[in-house]
Image (cartoon, rainbow, N blue to C red):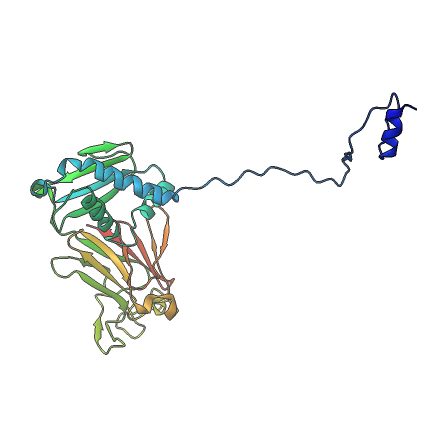
Length: 302
């Protein structure tokens, strides 16, 4: 043994044996059947606005961009605009209905007014906003972008004629075969069972669209078998003169809290529950209004 090896032994160092490689002091991990593999799970991708919100933003940007020629020109600003939307399937149409806040009339127009003002585009105080969905092709428009069209209305193009409509009973028995809705005569039409009833405030409510009571003259027990499911003050159809639009407002007797239900079946086979107090539900030609799950009224534009 050399002097160097003796010194190493004295200080606790064992010399390596010849021919034996020095192994690092690392414990080798041998995979077994119970070994759990660690998978690198990717972090979730941050999502943007919901689909309806994206469509709403797209619509607003389109309108603001096309009205930029009227920046700082209030004297020549249009008195109204009509948004035209091409939809090729019911799912897309329903998405746009949500984007347009159709259940909250006036909300989108209010948001448009705010964003137009932010871009120095000021429209008249009572400017008109209309929209319509088209299944096949867009009409002649002032501006186009993909499936969107915009008609800019001046005073000469503004249609102020009243929209006539009618109500026909498809299920249940009403006093008349059909009811004409004429905004030149009145803009609010009450629907309920019987001719009149007293409200909780003490006011006498007179129904314009009468669902026959079982003790009313001409009542047919077979035809009017479901009439009792309708409240005496069930709902009201209102006409917005500025928007030229009919809407359904559910009264206290037609809400779930009273044990009744009200639904709107749209021509595209979508169903809308009308169960929010004070909410206006826009009506379109061909809608069917179900009262109490038994009586069905057809709404038709003349």
